[in-house]
Image (cartoon, rainbow over all chains, first blue to last red; front, side, top):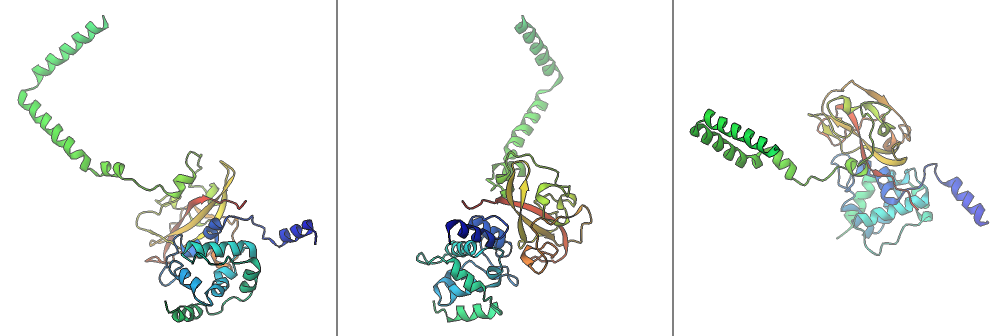
Length: 130
Length: 182
């Protein structure tokens, strides 16, 4: 595939909205529920602050974060979503050596959205011994 | 010449003052002024001006730019609002009316500000805790998605995490410029 054809294919696959920085994408697609500082709204929304850092260090947590409904259904292309997810992990205290999500990986994960999110989260965090 | 006139005028005023006021009343008034001046910094006005209040995002992003009329549905930042405008209900475009609580959970979109042609990130928060305002109903749908994409829908009642789920009106808070990736 020539470079021009590749660019055309990428443009066709991209959503109509223009790409924003990950920080703005967080504001547009996450912050409405998770708030700017990622704190929980008891009874409505689980916390990112504290939880993301644990999940990023827990086996299976990386995959979980790519499959939660808000991520899987975000109106963003795989490449933008990969940047956003990586930004969220760093923003909420993930390990320095956390490998960035790749567009292919995010595409695979979001194709299998979680059905019972709360149960999956509980199982992951209970297994986390730290 | 002008100085002479001023001197004469001041002298007349001073003599008149001396004739018309007793020393005791002068002392009483002076006392009031001294005590009052000492009390001035204790007034709430003085405290408010001395405090380093953090500016709201609105004030940072929009400093110096002409605004419109937040009581009008056509006002630029209402491009995806659905509800009664708080500016018509005792609040403003970014503050809730007294007696209501702003829902922290909200839906967020972008609107273009005609003053500078830039897209801004706008948070549409509901003000909760009182019955519906009923004034300035406004429904606009730029960038809004159908209700099955709930986080991007404005038909939903967004009083989450608040003491009451009764919605009175909606505000449109500017969070900042919607910076595009380079």
